[in-house]
Length: 248
Image 1: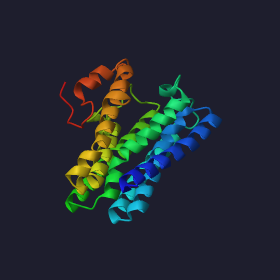
Image 2 (image 1 turned 90 degrees about the vertical axis):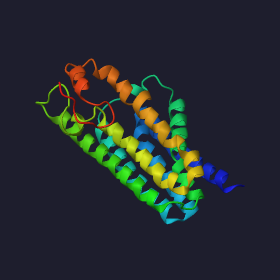
Image 3 (image 1 turned 180 degrees about the vertical axis):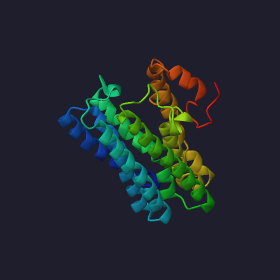
Image 4 (image 1 turned 120 degrees about the vertical axis):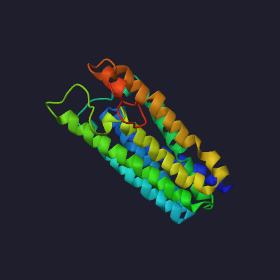
């Protein structure tokens, strides 16, 4: 069996195992949204599988990068959702479809991890560029989530959060997440050479499209535009990429 086919199968099996356990937990608690907590943990398990398969320092570096991102995100989502009901995004959806799609998505976004496990390092300097892009992403995710949590807890808050990173981007957390995916691709895909880069670029590209146009920024904008003050906020603030606020 070719190495790439074996690794692809192992990664798919790891993602399926996490999603199977998550499906059982979901049935017990009556909430499909628990999959959001498992999402990062599933990718972390896949990263470990790739690192054990490859046994290289770069694959273990990717494990560390994924672990920092995944554990922070899963912890944040768990804390935020505790005590709340089902996420409106999952109302009316089939449990089977949710877990199948999420498992397939984990495999898709793991392509840079698989590329690093199957390929030798071509350009070491690209690894450090990727780590820098990943660090920018984690910074934006962490700081913007912290600012949003503080805003929601403030009884004197205004109708719109327009301070801190949120004054430069209407969705700095989504921007940060996109940077994380492109950073991992640089470390695992592009640093391996042009062919592995092309074979794995679907991972960050798909995630960016998802974050901006599918379930992320654009979808949220539809409801946020109904909130008093939000259209004015949107007129002066970049939707995705952080930019200085426009003058009124």
